[in-house]
Image 1 (tube, rainbow, N blue to C red):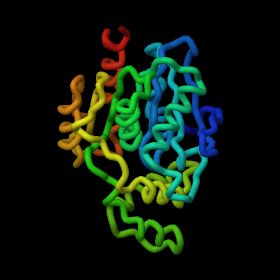
Image 2: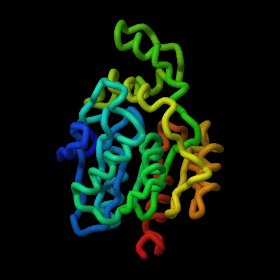
Image 3: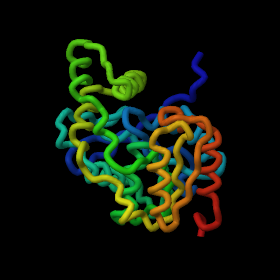
Length: 264
């Protein structure tokens, strides 16, 4: 018998370019909204439901809206790299908020989801009142992903020698519904695109977080220092891949979300 909570039934939201997004509405509709956006090669279930985030946010009286980003989970999975750009991912977030008629939300994102949150906040997604951005570096982290090795693995099973690429592929294969071809297309489509710019940070209150064993720690701290209302939390003993499961991260994030300024 599985010890994981059951998967929620998704509700479909259609994007402007015809990609169906799987969304999950968890909690009382009258509660304040937390919009949760997962990382690369993960899913709403893996990042937020199975790790206890949704459970604890619901217990604290927050409704959670989560989505499988395009190319992930139960959402549409184009294989055309042009279907993936930061602009489209930010537009997807706005489409979900508009579809659910959400006027105000706290944004919680990890890794790719945190990068999307940075740009959504900067570009004036009006509903975002504050954000928790975990595992977010400056620069373009996807440059280290070996597209050639990933494609060879998908086509012929050729072993991947690059450790980072292998780690992402292993994680992606463990998430039900993932499509490795779509994820490689996402890497190709986003590579060299918009990156977090410390000279143009979000103006909302933002809690940044990264694992103490994550190589991006210093870069994430730099982004936090650039944000006028930025705070930083180091997740003890965690790396980039297991940081979302840390109870200390959930506890610190909930305290930030629940702080008086968040309610005011």
